[in-house]
Amino acid sequence: MDKLTDLIPEFYYDLIARVTPGALLCAALVWSVRQRLAVAKLDPVIGLPLGLLASYLAGFLLDTASALTLGRVALYLFRALGKRFSIWQVDGWKHINETRSDGHRAKLVKMMAERAMARSLVTLVTVMWISDLAPMSGFTPLAKVGLLIGVIACWIQAEYNSRLPSQDLGSPRNQHA
Image 1 (cartoon, rainbow, N blue to C red):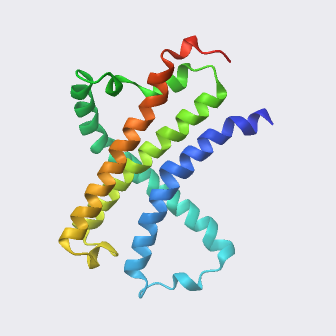
Image 2 (image 1 turned 90 degrees about the horizontal axis):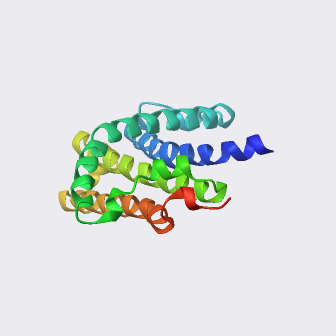
């Protein structure tokens, strides 16, 4: 049972941070090519595992691309903000690695997954806009701008929220198990 409990945060991280944005990308791709492919005729016994695998892989690629682009920009921006606001100096991964409380660690991992998902969704919306991928192809320019601003706002909120528990608790070494 202990092994299963150890896997749960990582499973939820992958589900939240990678499978969810990957599934949206896969759905957009299927939407765009639905006339050329018989996706609806795929047997669910084969289609579900294949869809989950494709979603994970697409999400992993989105996560990597967003970390190398938006993540780098955010790192620079948050360092600059950290000079004025201490919350932007908090390193969530450092607290995850140093915390003694399993409950606190699981909460932080979930919040970091939400942060990665939001960052990936910003990348996804941007790529869908640039490539004119469905369903974005049917949106007006103002709707596209509104969607992108909304997703960016969600990402910034997720970044902020992921730092709150670590800042509130101070140094994780002071926590009791």
